[in-house]
Image (cartoon, rainbow, N blue to C red):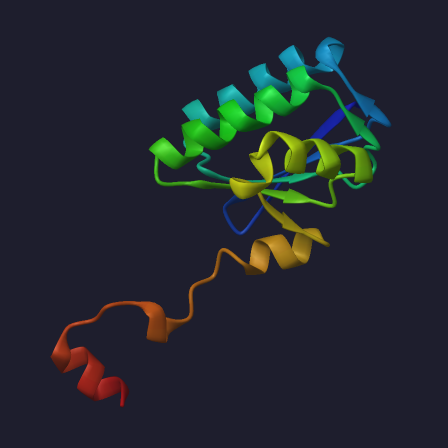
Length: 130
């Protein structure tokens, strides 16, 4: 099994991390793969960490840099089930404030959808909708 698995669903990239420990050894390869996806136009990414019990500071740094790149392009990064240790580090470093975390990939994907009433629409269209 590959350490990182990428798949696409409705235009969103889902990256699964198949590691118990994600460290500096894997961080650079992961960063390269994600950077390539961003360059190809993927600006909304879900990273599934449900199999990962430990993230070192380098791997967390890659997540922060990725979040910044996506934000600059109008996109979002969402994390699924970061392990207890990773969550603790996110809280200690303040990174928890920037990451959106979810219990499942489906929940993360659903969070990208904005209900129609949240869109600003012209008054003519708004009247037709009401």
